[in-house]
Image 1 (tube, rainbow, N blue to C red):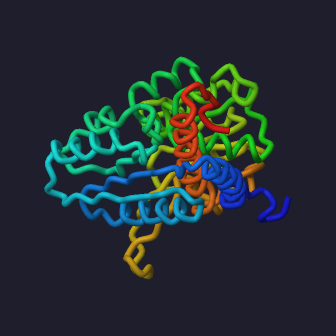
Image 2: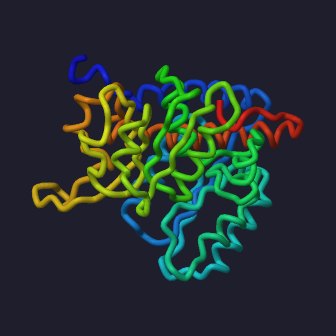
Image 3: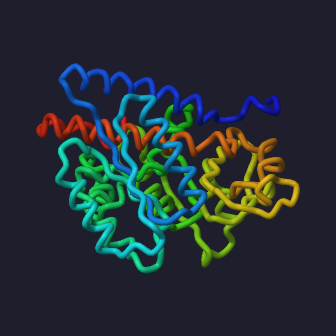
Length: 305
């Protein structure tokens, strides 16, 4: 296999999803409906500014109305909750996303629960997380886990019956991804091992896997000696490492030692260009689906298509 032939191109698959989403936006437009997505950002975290900017640009490109509300770092929780209440009541807003991280005086759990489940296109409301655990497809699935799943399915990688090792038990990726992959559906039915900081012999677990998803938040954690030849490797990590030669004094790396792992892997995502574009593509899909559901309450498509 050549050096590049085993790469999973997340950007190309995301573009495919965007084309499908744009068609759904056009169909809603024919009914006089424009999907609306509201972003809420607290503070001036540079990464948050970049992420929200990318999501805004994609929204506009697909014909989704977007608006961004920015609070200072010193904002009180009550101020953010008041805004969310207004957005919940605004029929032009179909999806609401509060960008993490939030400052310490604002409780993430309160903010997550304050967004109506039917507008929770980020998929973290307790109702939507509960539906995921129960296998109820009417909820919204968190964007990154759903993006990883779609990345596997649309790359032709067999998930059913596969042994998947997920590195990381976080609420944003690890736990919901494990729940998604074990569902009794034709595109899931995996056997999942969820590893974390207290797992013994993580390398042994990884070497038995057909698919390894690295979402543990440690730069270059997954080494070449931790996988067997032919394993599919999905890198979710986004880590800053010091780099005096870089313009900002740091560079972004994933959780996989990519140069060492790529020659051994059967398929592997680049980083960047793998999971990141898929996360945004699923957010756009969720937003359009929220608009479709608002327009036809009896409509009940799957959590992601």
